[in-house]
Amino acid sequence: MVKVKFAIPAGSLQKATFEILERAGYRVTGQDRSYRPSINDPEIELKLLRPQEIPVLVSEGIYDIGITGLDWIRETNADVEALQNLEYGRIKIVVAIPKQWDGVDSFSSFLETFIGSGKNVRISAEYLNLTAEYIKNNPSYRKFFGNTEPLVVTPWWRKGENPKVSIFLSFGATEAKPPEVADAIIDVTETGTSLAQNNLKAIETIMESTAFLIANKNSLNSPAKCEKIFDILALLKGVVDGSKRLHIFVNVKKENLERLLQELPALKKPTISPLSDEEWCSVNTVVEKDAFFKILPKIRKLAQGLVVYEPRQVLALDEVGSK
Image (tube, rainbow, N blue to C red; front, side):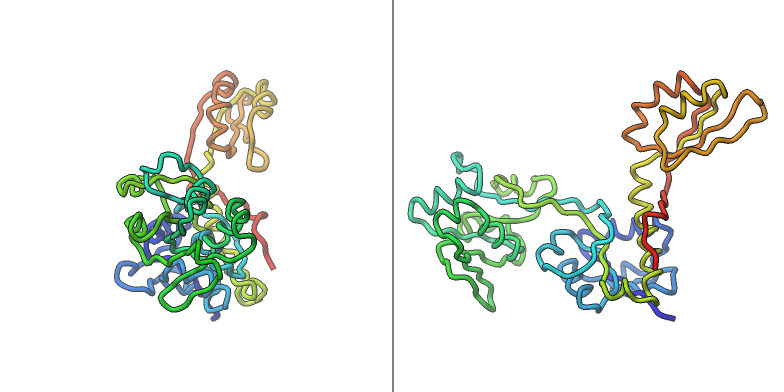
């Protein structure tokens, strides 16, 4: 039996990842005691890894699929297939500086203030590639330095030729670096609370990130693995879609049926069933949560006996590929 090797993230994404797997119908055990938790599907082999590592390991084929943040897919530039935005683990990567710099409200004005006064710039970041790319694309940086690469400094190597703007690899506690170690940081934030507690303010957002299901491209083309990968995709996508929808049942007089159907959005087409009273029928459909409050007044006028369920999953099977 061929197994699909599935890398799942340890750390901040771990709890939500186990929750979405369980909502998808999987039963995962041993996650608190082992980096190799068990799952109730004998064709899947799980491994807990740091999300930073997962894109590269999936790209290299060491794992067939994985869950990681979009930030690390971009940072590593890994050649993987992004199958599904799982829509949890939402964070922003921001540029932050000390609060007391009142006149600085953008990265361009930050560079203008420092470079224009003859000072060098030190930036602390865990995302070296994203940071370097962001700096090189800034118009003020290009005005001063053209296409030169900012200097990137790690304990093991240096690259880039512009020491006037240096990026130092951060191993954590990045918010504590300004002003002694760094003039600015590029770091993750969820609510901004940690930045505020360290007397920092965000001046620009580089990108937003959520958890993604990714796959190795060769594994997707493997007859032995692709169908299992599509099964996993269908179940996880079903959880994402289910969180946005409601399953409703309404009873309606046949004379009002057409008017009601015109108002009801549906996943495909609503199911209509006869009732014991020949003048009435039942309508069964799935609607977007955001649309429900808009159509509720119309449903009240045209129907009765409304029942609403929050579905665990909505499986739009025709939207998931198959080989």
